[in-house]
Length: 105
Image (cartoon, rainbow, N blue to C red):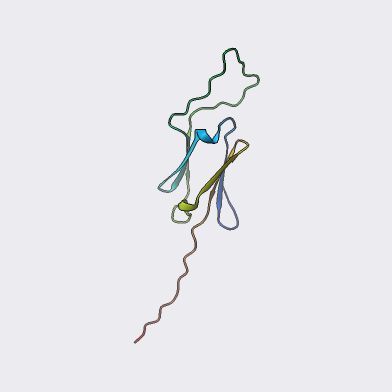
């Protein structure tokens, strides 16, 4: 997870071997949760197929990342999945502007 100069947080995960259809992203209180879909099953090899040098294991997973909801806009979160890399962008909430209120007598 990294924070950009404008306050945006980018979360990147290497998920080689998965497709975007395999992945769920949700929010829970002060967390972003990335997991495989409930019905996820690791693809089976075709009969007679062999894995050559296969070092990538695909399995069901669930990972949580704490992100304070008071500081970031959960409503504006975006996600992109390209080349096996999932990138979740979490923008900061707009800063509130305060003003002095004068009392009229």
